[in-house]
Image 1 (cartoon, protein in one colour):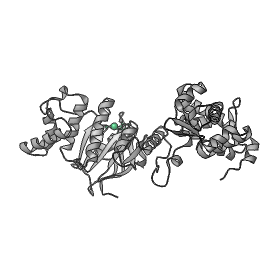
Image 2: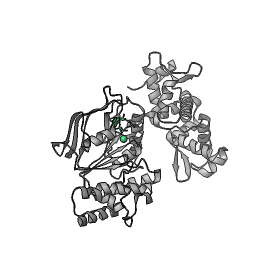
Image 3: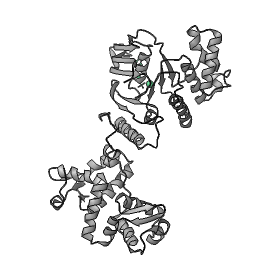
Image 4: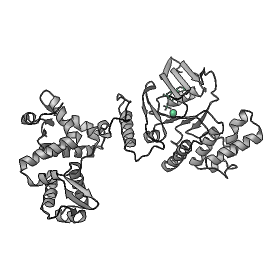
Length: 444
Ligand SMILES: Nc1ncnc2c1ncn2[C@@H]1O[C@H](COP(=O)(O)OP(=O)(O)O)[C@@H](O)[C@H]1O
Ligand SMILES: [Mg+2]
């Protein structure tokens, strides 16, 4: 593990209440460290004490309890190893870009020539070459924040603090600037040894951070941390990227959910992800058997997708959903623009109804973890019955309300056909038919 540059130990901050009667606790028992070489994100809702903690670690305000260690010694005043980028830019309107970037160096007693040399270098680094003499009011929000970054980086702080640096920018500008910071960091040309960034944007945290510390509120405290174990830059196309986003989204919407997660070696995506997160293609069983029968009646194995829609008299969207369902269940295989039956698919299309139900059930249990999960839940209940709401809530975590309802409806139709479970719409319950339990031993 890398060296700790700044450490907080049991840090507490209380503020006097406005009526003068007593105090209120803004943050409680914060213990964390910023390590050399890392980007650390603090993720939490507004009011959870993130900015307060940054101010304490920057030495701008003292903690009410606990200690801040900086480079091994207790911090007792402004932290000269830290520079801050603020959400509000906080530029001085009467100074030019150059003047704003130089001001910290001036305060540190750096001579005029050296000051200008360093400032111009940083202004170049943040892409503002040519704007040295412009005033803040002449700049767009994105450019102002570039000045904010240059002003902090020119101090060559060991740790760069960024307090919601992109929140005041429009989405595209924010994404550009964030991307540039990430590029600089990944290229190893960053003037600081670590970045501590505060955000309430989950995607921003996953893109930039090596570790995400999640804050809870009332009073502000640490709920836990997630290590983003992806190669840098963190690619949105990596399936684990989505999993981190999904996980942190669930964490942020559920104050009691455990934060820790490990998507690392040895665990596959399917094991980590909730079975309720996997979307089911919304198709009816009749559609599936219709497609498979049509394919089985063709003399050659393999049919052009373009021709299928016409033969089945379905819209292209419906056909795609059918093909999704059939590949999910391993009934068909798609090569380029051709669909052909697998052995199981051919069997399903040509056998008796009873056996095709068996095949369908077998494929559901093997290939769609959702069905095994529902059946197990029912089996573990005393009367093998469970309120439908319970399952709907699980879908609600991953889908908008209407979609959750459709997932539910499709799962019910498939599960019923497979005779895995039954649904009583009047009572609003799912249950396990008794004969299912006798016929289908579930491995434990
Ligand atoms: N100087 C202060 N005096 C009194 N209360 C404060 C002061 N600074 C922050 N707070 C309060 O502390 C809590 C945490 O605020 P803050 O650190 O800004 O949270 P965050 O940055 O996570 O939104 C809030 O309830 C805020 O109103
Ligand atoms: Mg804040």
